[in-house]
Structure formats: C-alpha cells, structure tokens
Amino acid sequence: MNHYEQYADVAFERHGQDTRVTAYHPDLELHGIGRSAAVFRIKATRLVIKVFFPGYTHIAAEEAMIYRTLEGLPQFPGLYDAGPTYIVIDYIEGKTLFECLIEGIWIDPAYIEQVDQALIAARRLGLTPSDVHLRNLILTPDGRIYLIDLARFRQGQQIDHQWEDLKRMYRLYRLRFMPKRYSERWLNGVAYLYRTFVNDPRR
Image (tube, rainbow, N blue to C red; front, side, top):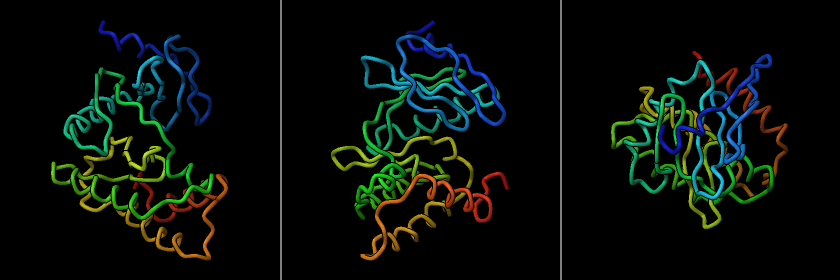
C-alpha cells in the first residue's frame, strides 16, 4: 500500500438520493461532497484526495488520465497519485465563482478570459471539455482561475454549450444596474431549471 492509498479507505452510506461519509482516516478533513465523490484535505499538506462513491469508481481512472494529459498547464491542479477509487491533486485555496456570486465578490472579465484560454489549451491536447460551471471554477486570492472536476473533458463535445450560456449571462451581470450578489437558493433554482429544460447531461 502506498502512502496515499491508506486515505482512500472511506466508508459511505446511501440515504435516498444522497451519499454520506460515515468514516475516514484521521489525517483527513472533509472538504466537500459532490454527485460522485467526496473530497478531503490531507492535513499538513497542500493536497486533497478525491474518493469516489461505490458505483462511480470508474471515474477515478478517467479523471486521472485527463489530469495527466493536462500536466503542466497553469489553470489545472497537478496530479500526485491515482488508484482504483481515488485521485490525489493539488489543494487550490480560493472561492468558487458560485461562492463569489453569493458573497458579492466581483467576477472580473479577466477571469472569464482565463477560463477560455484553459479550454482552448485543453482542446489543443485532444480533450473536449464540457460541464464547466460555477462550482468547478476556483478563484485564488491572487486572481488566478483553476478548473477542477474534469471527468467530462473527454465526452466528445467540441463546444461546451453550458460554458457559452454562462458567458451570455455574464454579459448581463456586467451591466451597471444588474445585481452582483445572489442568494444560494436563487442560484440553485436557476441551475435546476437550466439542467432540466436546457442542458440535461443525461440526454
């Protein structure tokens, strides 16, 4: 067993549509739970381990391959290790653009340009990014943007329609009279309607 594999021994429990973490290594700190995995900060390091739920473990190899392809590009975390159920990547300090909207932190046009440049660079390496949204874009304290949760970067789409739609909404956001702060409930409602009626990834 390598140094990181011990941290992948995480216990999950299913409650309806939700998956909960019930046990994990004491060196870990739970950072967040998504649709397919839980993310833990490895204490005393600048790393996180992403452990995939039962039924989603195949995504670990897929996402590891994508991170290896993107190695060296400044807009993406580095990959340190990968196993059958997990990946270990850089911990990126900052706030998601989703959190920025909730807290009223200004989203500068330069941040949008950084995302565009990252997607262009990924496409040049043969990837086809999709599912880019506000929760997987992290703004660091020094004004850099990082893209995370990259499992959908090999799904065959030449254009990420979701990101293009977000950019259209950003043009409205920049108008002087538009609010720069939104409630989490309102943003989640908009996201639900968008997924349901415009860009359902299951279709």
